Image 1: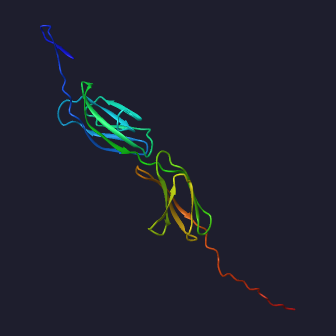
Image 2 (image 1 turned 60 degrees about the vertical axis):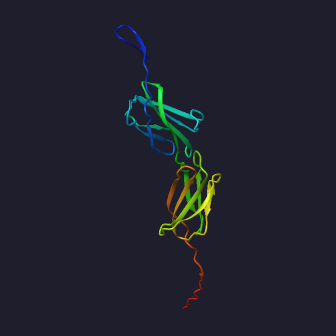
Length: 219
């Protein structure tokens, strides 16, 4: 930009680079990340440019960006993200226009793993329960099924590969109510669904005997 004085003389003007914002911890869910930052403590700032990408070499990978035109706005939510995926984010401050920017570098965060859907659990005998589900969306590594009697506090578990969508729990007690959870584990925070009060069949009667009643005859 240029400045013209009262005599009609034009001089170039120079804009100093603004101070960089400070990145704060983000908030996040299965399909969203909110980038948070702190306004520079000194100097002039017009606004910010926020990037979110699947690559640390912005703007490679799948990149979203947003221009924030208020210096007092210090967060930006990005939505429609992939569960269990690592995203990198960076915030630039700018003054006057985006030709004068500053940043403190980038950070990263995984979105939370998605939970399975269509979860069902039903007894098939006095010692077994069949569990099934539809696989979780996004990225994850495996499933873990926790189960315990509703009357107990300690759970057992079995790990299941991500390619599987069913499991039969065996060695259970007859006529008991069970809590059953299916967890999704990966690099992002886990997620889970719960079924409560899934009851096994009663135990069969054992050592049953019957004697014929001969009765009595009267004439």
